[in-house]
Length: 282
Image 1: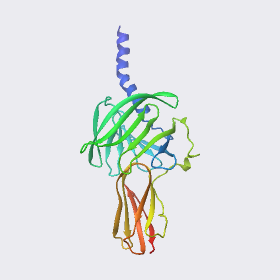
Image 2 (image 1 turned 90 degrees about the horizontal axis):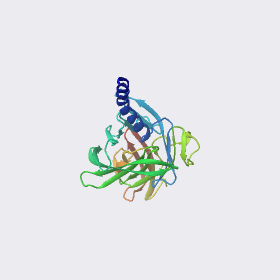
Image 3 (image 1 turned 180 degrees about the vertical axis):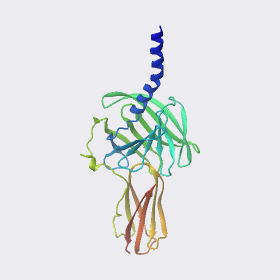
Image 4 (image 1 turned 45 degrees about the vertical axis):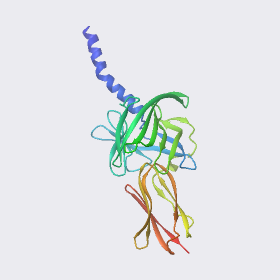
């Protein structure tokens, strides 16, 4: 009898740890080299994201880095919940797996309050039956549905939808988890071609009159500003000033009211800043 009690005591002690290991390693895979290919409404072709590094912190949580960025994007807490880093250096809860389906939790995005509803279902993905958690973000100020993400217990995030301007959605095409490939990975042949960070392209046409197009890439959700300056450093126009999700963006700049001359357009997101020159020729 004493032996049975000892066995039961050990099982009670290790069972919560077993549950946490399953939770942490399934709904949010975080092995270096894990890779996802996405089809996005904001891009002309599919694109990749991959985990380039992880770091265990003193509190036992794990920072997860994507796409060779030098700043982490997510933080996995010891209880399995996932937090996201934002460009204003805040860390807010993103996926609360302890919340039961049909319940709600609260978070903050760039100082704005949101409530998140949680739901669940089961579906087949890549030939496997998988459990799904669905997270929907709503603005507390006006109850507007602002975003949605679906997370699989085998493949991690597999669907993303955002109502932030411009609205966009992405769905998974294939992935590699713990070295095992699922679906179809066809967009690139090697990791040297993967997305490695922000980019700002030269405007086209250039010189131009009266309008030109500016294209830039955001590798992860962040607050973005795109501004135009004259050669004296005076700001002429603010083209973008908002939270944007990962994707390629195309902005048209109309310079009908500006005189001939050299101007500078600057993209800023977090610590990333890049500027390029353009010429208005009338």
